[in-house]
Amino acid sequence: MPVWTLYGLKRGVATNPWPEGREETQAGVEGMPRFHPERCKQGCRICADVCLPGAIRIIENARGERLTLDYGKCVVCQMCTQFCPDGAMEKSQDWAFAVSKRADLIWDEALMSLPAQALTQKIHAAFGRSLHIRHVDAGSCNGCESELQALNNPYYNLHRLGIFFTPSPRFADLLLATGPVTYAMKEALLETYNAMPEPRWVMAMGTCAVSGGAVGGGYACGRGIEEFLPVDVYVPGCPPNPAAMIQALLLLLNRTQQRVKGGRLAD
Image: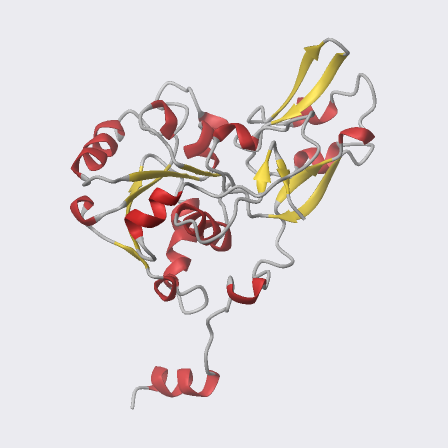
């Protein structure tokens, strides 16, 4: 008997039961910074000044200046939490940020409640409880790919959820794209999408795919997948961790509820 078989029998089941039992598999892992606008002081621009990708901006409205936060541009560098003098930007373990509408990643000052939102029933009718994914690296730094590889290890074991990666776009239901879409990869991305049968769906995985990230709009790339293809699910993070990726895939399959709306994560 191979030594690895003996080792596996000795260790027992290594797969985390999440999402069954709602156990938070990423406890202790830093997530998106949590925004507390009531703590902001008038005229303070420190967090906006240190935000490299421009996720934090100062905008003008009828009541004067206010801060806005776009989680779709956040690379989770935690610079804002380090430099904010008043605790308005706070470290958190908020990692489940997958949304079906890009606008839900932008802080909405007027939103006071967070009703759960699910994707349309037609997705569930089309896929049932299984999903086949074709992944395309459209110019990523390989950070997202590193996390994607973990989905098939014994701990996350994506196959237990009926979700599989496929090498051919002709057998794929979902195009999972990473990177800001470099111009060298634009045609490959579009050809992959066009080769997929209907119904087909697109997921923008990682901040670069959602908005272009820190390099979006440069001389060699666009500002994310949305410039070239219709996106059904957005997953910010630099990179998003494997549990966030699983939450996004289950959201697409209508097997879990969206936890973010108006830039606010439900507790």
